[in-house]
Length: 205
Image 1 (tube, rainbow, N blue to C red):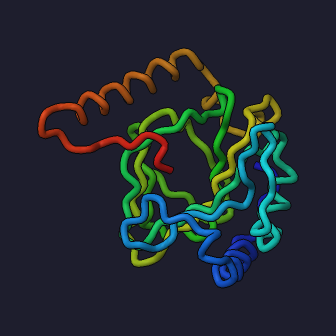
Image 2: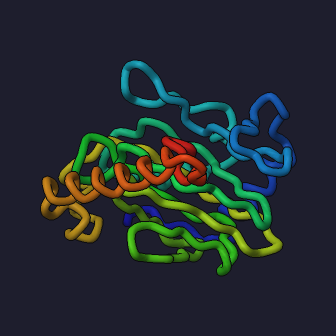
C-alpha cells in the first residue's frame, strides 16, 4: 500500500490527539467499559467525498497517507478497543470487489489483539495497511492489557486501489458474494434460535 509512515510518528500524533480532543468529539458507541471507542477524522458527506474534521490536523501522518490512496476517501475514523475488549461478530458491505472498500491502518495494536474472519485469526502490526472482504462476519478480540487503536479508512473501490492489494480479494466476485451471504445467513439463523446467543451485530465496527 502507498504512504506507509513510521509507526512511532502515528503513535505520537495519536497520543497528542487523545490528550487534546474534546469529549464531544468522541463516540462511546459499543463501549464495554464506558471509555470512548471512536473519533472522526473525515466525516461522511452526501456528496460522496468525505469532509475533513479539525481532528485530522493532529494526524498529519494519516493525512499524508490519505493523499496517496488512489481512490476517493469517503470517511476516516480512529477506532479504539479497550483492554480485554471484544467487538462481537459483525459485517459491513465493504470489499475491494464491490462499491466501497475499507482499509485499516494500525496505530497501537498489541500482538494479542486478533481479528477473526472466515477461517483465519490474524494480527497485523503497526506500519502495515491491510484490508479484507468485510461482508464476511468477523470479530475482534483484544486479550491484552493495552488498548487497540486502528484508523478505519473507507474509500471508493477503484482499479488503481485494487492493483495495490492482493489479487485474490477481487477474484471470483460472484462466488465471494454467495459465500458471504451464506455465512451471514448461518449466523442470523443461529441467533434467531430460541435460547440462541446473540452472535451477530450488523455494522458494529
